[in-house]
Image (cartoon, rainbow, N blue to C red; front, side):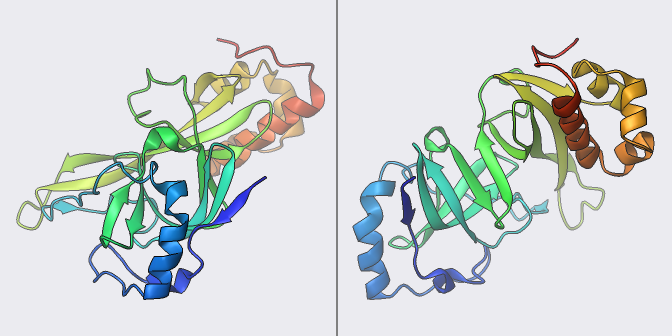
Length: 242
């Protein structure tokens, strides 16, 4: 698989945030950027990224407002050490343009997947457009296999209780989905999750002790165990049971 190091000087942007001054750009870095620009010329023309108004409390970003140097995959090509921010409110992936010193939107339709903080892997998925928070289709992959477990992060604006400081507040939510061959199944209650995979609840209770406790305390861990149990003990999967 072809891998390209996009930014070889990660310390150049270290600590830069939405509110801090733009980093200094060296001539050698500009030369490097211009050499690799053809790979990204179409990708980063999604327009300048606009920050939210200061009347809103909270950040639109996933985990942090500081750029992380992650992996970006486009058309089967891995680009490494790419400075990225994931805006989970608007489902945007953002990078930094060293020539114009601006946060720039990446074209969502060009992105196959990206990895932040070394382990948090997001992929583009189609087929869930009826889900109101699908937006650009970026889901975090929690388990990969024939049946996948996906998580959708999203944020919503609510009226602030303290109108003296902020007019609105940004709150974070998440939904879990099973995915199989382009089909999505939203995961709610434990009983429904077991049924969707065509499993017997008595078998699950036997093989996953304290399953009720597990699901309440850590639903992601339980659902991964549930998928693995199905893969190990049952015949081929032919689709979700409604």
